[in-house]
Each structure stands twice: as C-alpha cells, then as structure tokens.
Length: 309
Image 1 (cartoon, rainbow, N blue to C red):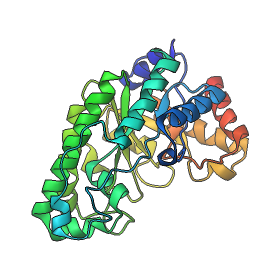
Image 2 (image 1 turned 45 degrees about the vertical axis):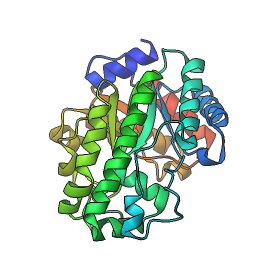
Image 3 (image 1 turned 180 degrees about the horizontal axis):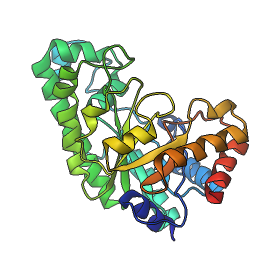
Image 4 (image 1 turned 90 degrees about the vertical axis):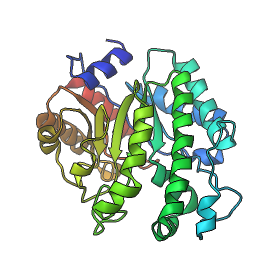
C-alpha cells in the first residue's frame, strides 16, 4: 500500500498491509520562518520514514494590540483575522513546502488547537478568568477566534492537507490540571470546537483529547474520525475506548516515558497496544508530543517494531 492508502484504510477500518506509524515533537516553530519549519519537519520525516506527517503548529495567536487579556474591553478587541497575518502565513508556507516536497502520497496532518486553547496559548492561562468573569465578551472573543480558525481550515484544505489533529483542553474535571466543570466546558469549549470540526469535514479529523483524568463522555459526540489521548496515563485504556467509540484510535507510544525507556520497553508498549486495540482502526503514535531530545535509537526502534508486527 502507499502511505496515503495505508493511512485512510486504517482510519476507515479496512485491512492494512501494516499499521501506520508516526511520532511528533516540537520544533520551536515560532522562532523560525516557515521555510525552516518545513525543513525541520522534512528532515525528521526522512530520518524515520514515517507513514504520516503530523505537523506541529507553534506560532501563537496574535493579540489585538494588547500585551495581555486582562479586562472585558480586551476581549471585545478581538476580530476575525485574515490568513495573511504572519502567524498563519508562515505556517501555511511550511505546509505548502511540505506538500510540494512530499508529493501527494504522504499524508499530512496539520495541528489545530481548539478556540479557547488557541486564546490561552497566545494570551496565557490567566485570560481564562477574564472570559468566565465577562461571559458575553468572552463569547464574542471566541466567535472571532473560531471564525479565524475556520478560515485557516479552509486555507489548509486548499493546500491539499489530508487531516487535522484537533487539540482539545478541558475535557476533564476541575480536580485535574487544565480541567473544567462540565457546564463551563459545554458553554465555552464544545460549541466552538464543533464549529471548527464541521468546517474541517472532508479532512481526517483526529481529536487529541489533552490532559489526565479525562471525562471522555464530553467528546464522544464530536464529529471526528479518530481519537488520540495519553492512554498510558489516563482512562480510558485503548480497550475501554474500543467499547466507547467506533472511531479509529491513535496510540501505543508512551510520550512521557519513551525518553528514558529501553528498546525492549518501547516494543512492549506498542505490542500491548495492538493486543488491546486490535489491528483494525489503529494508528501507532504517541499519546502527546514526545520530548525533542528523545533518543534517535528509540524512535528507529519504534519504526522497526511496527513494521515487524
């Protein structure tokens, strides 16, 4: 099978010649122009010959003429942005180069953060308190960010990207880091997430449910083709997820421990994941990003293990 055929077959639950595998890490994109971001991704892809390229998107959302979001008036300054803004233009340039260099046969999956997470990545977590204190202005801000992300999704479609890796925060209770009461998740997170995901229809939508102590019920009705989460460190397990959803699953690699594991431990994790989830609708990948200095020999062993399964 070609890599693109293998990727789509795994997502759709068809038979595959072997499981698709990829790993991703941060490249400090915000410190580089788009050309360098593309070069770093290409070098990483060529070193390990991944079956799909999950592109990191580390450019931060621009704030509208302010240094931070501290007041209701700050929230009301947000307006939808065009794609010629440098933070979007540089990432789109990287994606355009990747598409040209990889050709049509290698799946490219772009990272898109949920609207509220997009804000917090650009403004800091303290902005969340301003949103909940001034909910009407918070919803106006979220509507503007959401419209911007919808425009971004349309732009990556035009570039021939194959999928989105949609990162969701807050799908866990307030006892967990980054967690929210369900009513706040239902008000400030889920409705805007769904708008972006609906705009991404036609792409393979992989929902990355970020964090620990997850309440997976919060995202089971999201319009997705696959789920990714830190299944080594939070429920549900891969076996439990098989009972919760008929969507494809991404996992097998422990993103926290792989940095210090032996090759045998890495292999055992991957084989255990296949035993749990089966070979249908399964893609091998980490539960979240691996550390940038994860040893090269371990990543090569990831590929060797999957291709020998």
